[in-house]
Image (cartoon, rainbow, N blue to C red; front, side, top):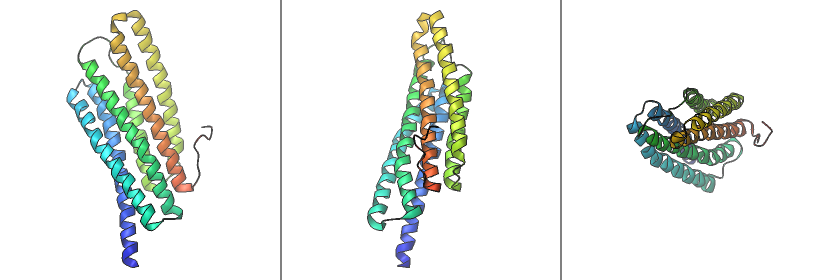
Length: 221
């Protein structure tokens, strides 16, 4: 019995480790996707695109490991909440990776020419989102549901910056119609960042569920 319990705990610990790997990788992908644009570095963008396969692989492994634990050990209480949290969270992490790839690919378009360039708000949006994913990791490791409020606050800032970016780029495109391709790339990047912030909030909701057993989805925040 002790050996079985030890194996069970080891598998739960491995789940936790894989989740943290996904959070770190997703955050690095967003950070370097934006660096590839701001520093005009296509090599960083290619790293982001190539890293998506690793993130997808981690998602599949984590899903399979969760299903194995559910089938073999039938966890209850906190352990069950952990498994459910991870199974829901991997989808958001995988989609964050997809958005990072989208950002990197738009960066390839921008590095091919000159004209409209990323506005200063992009730097702040990227910083906020990387900080949000750090909050997700800390909230999960420390079982701190309070990070959810900080995530909501950061998301509101990202939303505001996204609106500012759109207004500036649309205005610039009206003044320079020949820059419409670059302008569309910039608005696409801004929208992708806004979606990453949304996914980070979803991850925060799952942390609240993990810690408190409370479902705060669609709670009017």
